[in-house]
Image (tube, rainbow, N blue to C red; front, side):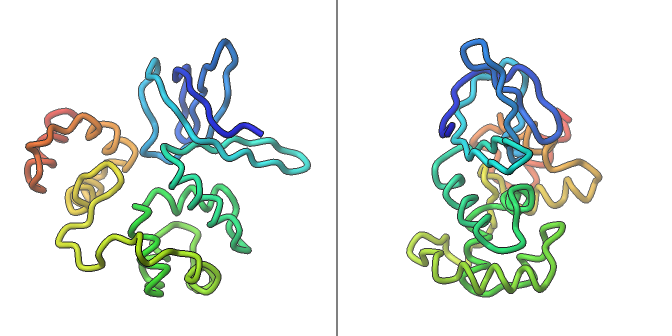
Length: 190
């Protein structure tokens, strides 16, 4: 079983990276926020998904993302692609929604309806550690790359795709902390 890959991004598509490791190219499905430029060095924590007709690799930035992904796919009705879609949202926000039973937050993911969201809460509520959750009353929700969600939502409203926004904002300077500064930075480089 492949558990970790370190290599150079050789090629990419909307949801996949071809990671070149010692002359071998691995096709790895990754969350949109991990899409990077060709030639970038990456370390990915891997989940190897085996079915009778498929061998697929799913890559994550760290062990926590990988563990949460593997927890999600234990729920009946959630396959690897659906779990990957769920992980496009911040992990802390999803875990908070599961722990508090926030069904509307869980149904924001395409393909997750009310019944599936209720099943997520029912099956995972006891498995989500409340001590590791982010505070529920954060003044600004941050997504995985540390930018406030209001700025990302505003840019999505303008018609930009989340993966494009994330790609541009990977080099956001630390001093750009306000929503306005983030949007201005993005629009100058989009």
